[in-house]
Image (tube, rainbow, N blue to C red; front, side, top):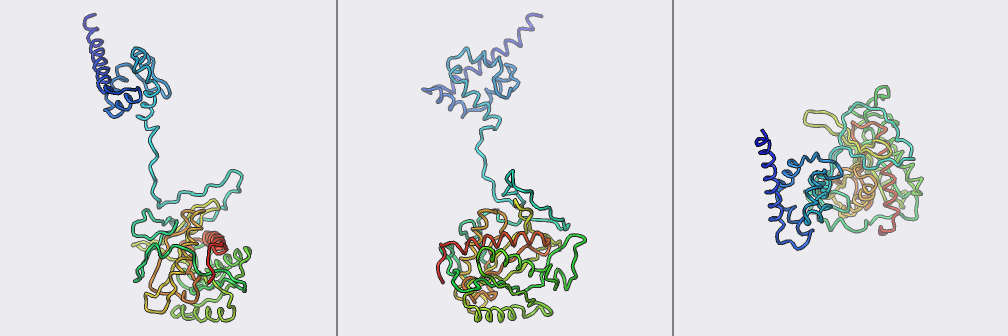
Length: 390
């Protein structure tokens, strides 16, 4: 019986001896302890596993087992490398791995957590519409200007260099300096249960307390509070007839520019409509420290349709500058800038933008928060001394 009991012990001793010999072989040629450990780390993890198994290592969190300590104490090389072995064990658990770069995600990531003493964000009523956060996952296929992604759907060639540098439009001495219009002013949002409005069409209403005119009110109030003189045209150019809305809003813009030559910026405020292939309506959301905000997108028109619009790149520079400013504080608030063939009346000034605040699936509360964040970012951008005078 004693002879049989000795056999497993002998086998264990042989395995341990083989392991130690392997360590000596792997570390051969290393002049320092660090070099020896580097050589060991390049080899298979098998000896470490065998050593643990044979010596009864139960993987203590911070220390080596008593048996392992005993073996190390019998070898000068291992004794001098105790800390390195501990490090090797931690590395084997994944504790010392370098963090991997995380691509831009398509789900809300709460990029702006509230500070401990800040008030809790408002609890907006849920309107029941499924939410998505639409942001690029890769720069492939886009032009980049700072943090801004640009999607060129126009017939015009466009390079990243053409988007760099200051934009042409600048605040002047005259008042007002900003004009807000709504070519499609009846565009509205999806209200929570109990807060419905009287509709004038699908996701449309003439009630300016619930359509994008209300969004324009919010933007105008914030710009004015920042010292930027703003006039807000609250007319509905898409009602009662939708067709011809851009012609009617163009006539209004030209009339305002003739009456107020100090206007340098024209914001045409809309909202988007987003559905999938099955017709499911979605809202676009950015989680912020001020609550769930509707995402925004900027549309830049060109001369791709054949209509005259020679300075469309200046509008694009403005859009990219505004987007870059906003994304520094709210990384998921803006969807990529879209460049299209239609000019959207943006030939009237070098500071014209079409601003889409959320989508039909968003609630009014979400859109109003987006309007606030956009207005703050726009004001910061156009009051920056880096812009040039027109």
